[in-house]
Image 1 (cartoon, rainbow, N blue to C red):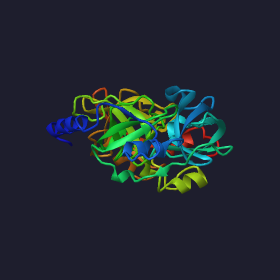
Image 2: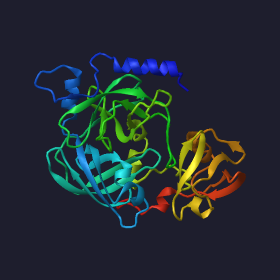
Image 3: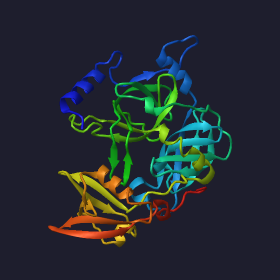
Image 4: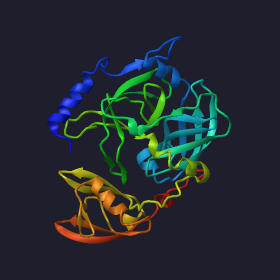
Length: 340
């Protein structure tokens, strides 16, 4: 865990960095420009698109994510768009609008729950420019980066705040996400670039507390592009990674006063069938005590692939209960996107 004094010092240093006074827009470069920020603007121009999705009626994710979703995506090739997966999860209609204002129909071509990435395949070639992929492992704290979302003519300069793990209450864990400041509003599926215009991340969240322990610092979370590299061929060919799926239980949790508390259970999901209810406190997996959400997921996933029976230990009404939950592949629970 980062020391709070060092955390405050890092944050102060980031905000005081030369040329950094909040979010700075970077216009496309004029002829002969050599400034790296101008180079970034020129390199990313035309690579980002708008994504609009209509979700299948009765979809499991409609309650939390909505039946119509909009965000951004980035062009990988003339007919392939990379976006954040929740925008197109369980979608049966997808439209892609390029920076030139041309809308083409598409379909969900792939989805990966572990990373959160989604792929769209368009019916016709797009008018735009394919992005150049970078190396997100090289992105470090305090580094300047640039984000661009749909409808924006200029990239916005950010700073990397942290690469610490992030655990989401929906059974999601990233070990090294890219957390940035200051927060931007057009984050869903937006592209994150290095100063030379290479894609290193895709926008996923806006966070009220992007660096716990630093006094509620708001920021954004980007999924590192290197998580796509081992699975891109599988997503293109099969719609999903061919690696064994992680066990999924269908519980949404929050951390309250240090305890992992169930706040929602997916109807007809594994946890629902096992009798788990909102208000239950998860205190362990088998005889292993958990220390938080990230620890919970790691202990569940190390038990085996989807289909593994996960022995949860719960605290309910002052009593400890051991509840075996037969896990499943999350994709088997959802209405499958077209093409997957």
